[in-house]
Image (tube, rainbow, N blue to C red; front, side, top):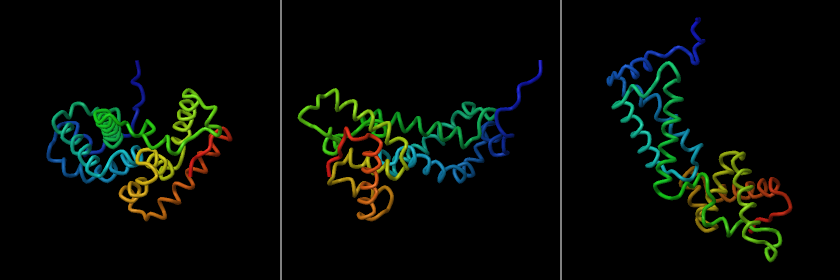
Length: 198
């Protein structure tokens, strides 16, 4: 019976050494992956993880790989793809332990921002449905606009600017512009049944 076609490009020399447990390539591995994994985690968790969190997750992944190189199947995936999957899982576990899961839930500031158009007729179920629709819509937004909404939902109108400034190195005015654009996009996505508080 013929062998199935390979599922990935041929392994690089670095990947082969990592898979074989060669600890001498750890420095080269860090050089290859560190910046890419930071960018990946920022894109996946734009507000929930600070730089120290990302560094801890990446260091933990590297340590796990050195300790158990056999977990990396070089015939199945590139080391970059494998690393991204692993650090994302670690990040989700970290957020679960903190009891936040900020990437997937609306934070306490959401109620100050998201309202039904006719508040006096809204029931809890209506608001819950709108919030679920909002979460789905926001996942399709440009990362910076998604980050702006997550920031205001989690930190409220008073804290979102500083959160964005710390995360992205932008000015307070830029943070306000991101949120303004994100609000318009969310209103367009959810339709006339929803209004966003100023």
